[in-house]
Image 1 (cartoon, rainbow, N blue to C red):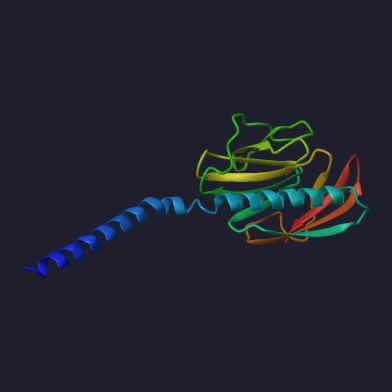
Image 2: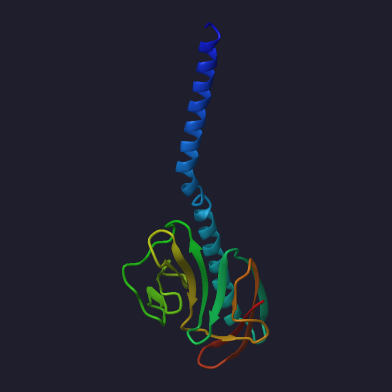
Amino acid sequence: MKGVSPIISYVLVITIVLLTTMAAYTWALPLSRELGEPGKVSNYRNQMIGLDYVIRSTAHGDYNFTTEYEMRVPEATLRIDPDKDSVYLSFVQKTGVIGRPNTTGTTTCNETTWFFYDNLTKVPMYRLNNYSRVFEGAAGYSQAVAEFALCYADIDLVWGGECIKGKPASEVVVRVKKIGFTDKPVVSIDLC
């Protein structure tokens, strides 16, 4: 009889530890997918701000001024819309890092546009600040398609034709080249 009590106590302690571990794992598993999202979204935002700088500096440079900008965008798609003079970075956010604006916005932009809308992905976006050409937004308030966009009213973006207009890849080389000037600078852009 003396040996029964320590064995029962040991089994009860192990059972309690296993049950609490399983409960914690079950509770935390859905939340663990959200851990890297703020960092990933911030990384995408910073790369789009850098691409905006490259495009604008190329537009104000000399003719045939060419530069390349490397982007690391895992789990995202980068595409060009030369008809709207826009560049889009689309991805699925796993938690609500980027918010959804209350207004849909316009599909074309100018210097005073604060709300922008992508017809392809149905994502409404808002401008980051007065000095930026970067728009961001999401299709929903939590896990949903999210997007960053660069939109230019004073630069004519054209597809260069050497590479492609859209690329779902982890690494993208963006080739930017000033090819002329009409009523505004004409900049050729390729995603390689």
